View 1: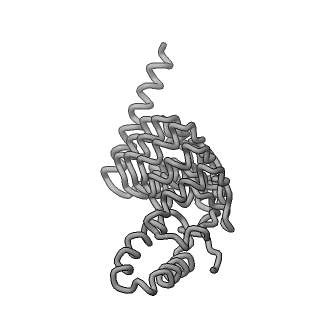
View 2: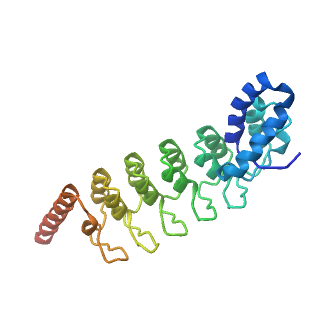
View 3: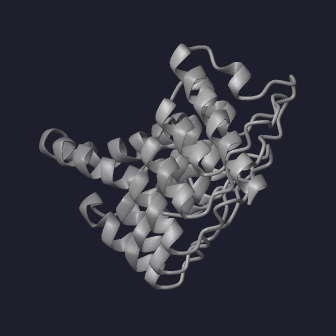
Length: 252
């Protein structure tokens, strides 16, 4: 049988499909299951990871999750990387498989391991707006300010995803609001919040101490990139409040 690598998420999908297939074409069930696996691995690379699940294919798919857990419990390397340097934890997050994420974390998956783009699991959870997994990773002391190969932190990813709740969680956990994105644009989280026109996130970043004077690589501050009257008003108020605070401190 062809050796392929498949995520538990795929197995769960196959479980549902195979139940229907078994009712109509029992004699071709195994062949159909293998075809579905091959097609999924080919067309959805986010499902593949470093576990070799070949030994599970000959069994009925309803037992796959239990057997996957058994492999983990028996000491399978949960930090193994695939050709893209993604680990099972990265891929479980991309597939939004909270049950598998929890299992991997319990058995010692590295919460700060980086893939081929230097993204950690926290980058991925913030990028795909999976609030519950973000909390799980932070509870295990995931590095909140670690940068990927382009300088992006999980906060950049949360802002880019336009997820107010995740941004709030990351800021509360100590995310640095002033790290600049080191690509050709050089934007910090505040720039991206303005680009997303998310006034709530802009207010949160400013309240957390975002530097209003940081310029991107085009020489523009986030305020200068604001395009709506409401957004400009937020910055005008922030500048006024900070100036007033500075004046009070100067007089003390």
